[in-house]
Image (cartoon, rainbow, N blue to C red):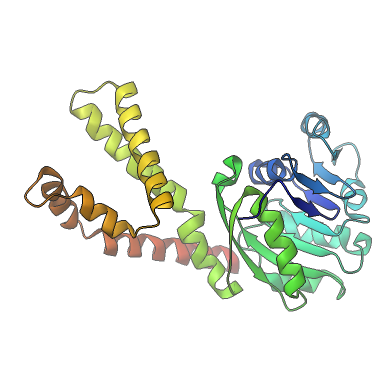
Length: 282
């Protein structure tokens, strides 16, 4: 992960300020991150644009009142983040194509939209990188997958890596693996929350109040994750250390093993991957 106390990026345009767009923006305006030339953001609603325009180094435009907002934002920008809904992407690319600066890097944050779609609608002078961040970007703990296109080089990918490292870790993969990555890190937070929900319900069933159950379970997940990161040990080894032979944890693990969780997670991620491919083909 990049030291965010010493990051310099070129002029950035962020088209679309939904939850993921705002999460990325939070990293770009963090202390120690310098965006030379500033950040231009577009959003449909004037109220949201006004709010974003109060952030340091940010100029925000509302597309509802300024039809030329997207073209204004990308003019002169060296990095253009496309963070609108996937269905809106083709029309947006046609709108901004002539206003892009030759040599600019266009970064897709739109799930399911292929690099080929971007490259077909943009000039040959434009590099395209596809990305798949996840929601912990909001707290600077994202895992973002990135894939380069036919016109992107190592320098382009390094620039995009540096950008996303302001909100977490980055993994570079071929585009063919990006949908599979989305079933792990993209959907992964939901799997974790689902497990937390189930264990919390079990705690309440054993007589704890909802607040106590939340404290017990949330704290346990947070502590276990932190130990995993700081120890550098394999999760199987950490599990073994908790599981004393003949003890209570061993008995609980034996019950969990009857569910064959490895196969269950394989099936779940296969289902997510199948759906991702359906969406990409639609």
